Image (cartoon, rainbow, N blue to C red; front, side, top):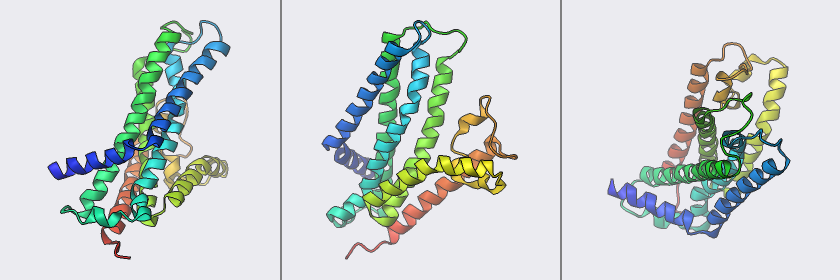
Length: 256
């Protein structure tokens, strides 16, 4: 247990000692503040509450995704690029623990950014907008937390995918490129498949990542899709990503 804690601490040190990490956090905070200023300046007077602002700011989880993918793509592939993987694997711990420590460090970084987004939007929202707002759009803190929870599920799946690509192909650039292309193109592809009524598309990962569609006025894009179905599909894809990463990392030859 102590070995695992030390490994995770070591990975966190690698992440947080780099200036880019703090630049990412500063950018996220700056965008959050800018978003508030714009809403305050151009939004209807008295119609925006702190909770409304926080709900809108949840869309900035896209930045959390981008920054987390950069870390996930580099945390394994970077070891191969810089040739430090050999030094890492000569420690008296198994490869599985090494990879697990990296994965946990990535998830902790993602959670830290998401917490920064939530807390900063909470503070800024109540400072600039207060509790007043349009009563025709009822929002509760529970509803906002649920929205962030849905975003967290989507973030975890997407970041795990980037981590898997980094582990399998040993290339940070490839992992980042593939993650961004697939994630950003998925919306357009799914829109086309939904329009064509391709029922098999409900088994695609990106048809199931938005669990919020089961808790509002929206309907699932295909017949037969339920909350249980989407959760099952997410678990299956997650298991595949993890299995691929761990299997290939444990068997990979690092002597060359």
